[in-house]
Amino acid sequence: MLVKKGQKIKSSEITPKKLYMNRRKFISSSAAVAGLGLLKPESFFAFQEGQKTKLEIAKKGEYTVDEKLTSYEQATGYTNYYEFSLRKRETIELAKDFKTRPWEVSIKGEVKEPLKFAIDEIIHMFPLEERVYRWRCVEAWGMIIPWIGFPLAEFIKKCAPTSDAKFIEFTTIYDRKQMPGLKSDVLPWPYVEGLRMDEAMHPLTILSVGMYGEVLPNQNGAPLRLVVPWKYGFKGAKSIVKIRFLKKMPRTAWNRQKPEEYGFYANVNPNVDHPRWTQKTERRIGEEGRRPTLMFNGYTDEVGSLYSGMDLKKNY
Ligand SMILES: Nc1nc2c(c(=O)[nH]1)N[C@H]1C(S)=C(S)[C@@H](COP(=O)(O)O)O[C@H]1N2
Ligand SMILES: [Mo]
Image (cartoon, rainbow, N blue to C red; front, side, top):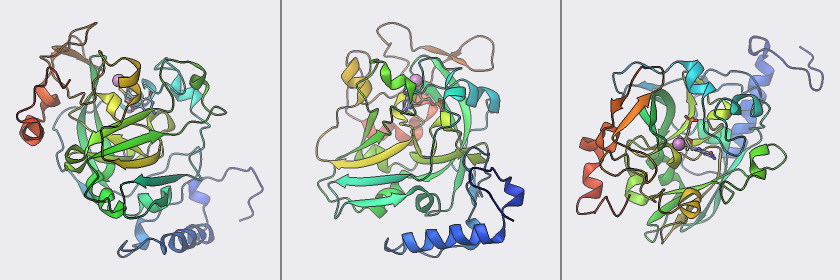
């Protein structure tokens, strides 16, 4: 099939040639990365900008909560992405032409050597898992999302951090041409978030590349975002371009903007109110009324021990 420049092709029309080319490109670029293991041809997909792309899920169910999923329309139509807009229903339209290819993630700081990964290398590095998690925004609403991704811990191993790495920092793309919200000074851009190394290595923490069976929609943080289900949603940095391993706790965007409202830890905690509203209850999107908020968003059995001996009123 002949494809003219700028012409869109349906995924049903993608030729074996195109698939082959993508595959070749991937193999040659990843040859530089040691220890990736066997590349399974069946796990390749042809990413097409602006189209829904199905992801092959190798594993289902780990840590999955048995609760009714938030509708796809609400999870993708009511999003927080301030680089585009402060209005949750507006980001879907403003992000629709956002370019997620080519895309590189650079690895810096306390590592054996600095690295760069292309996004399609990252997506094919590990078997993709689907995990249905509770998701709780600091603004006291929540959702149930079927994320697709892999444990951040696995990716960290590929980055080979040194023993000096005690924290990890995530930086989001800063592109004023594509992101009209960057004109606002609501946050000190770029959007930066971070975790303590043991939080980052916890098996619940994932890097997500998709949701609802498909590649992440742009407004939900394509092509790569962090998901930490026991913390407030703002920890989940979207559209990551840089990961740094650090000796000291990084300064994060929300914490810099309003330290008394947004702490570094940001664990979901019904006993510590936000200065301007209660955190005891929350609205689950798609439901009437409010629910009680659960400590660590209901993940106490899994993560409670990470914080033993810490005063969570001080370390909010
Ligand atoms: N880069 C970036 N990441 C971000 C945000 C943002 O504005 N910019 N918002 C955060 C907030 S406040 C929340 S609640 C979640 C929302 O994720 P969702 O829109 O996919 O539900 O993304 C987080 N990650
Ligand atoms: Mo949020």
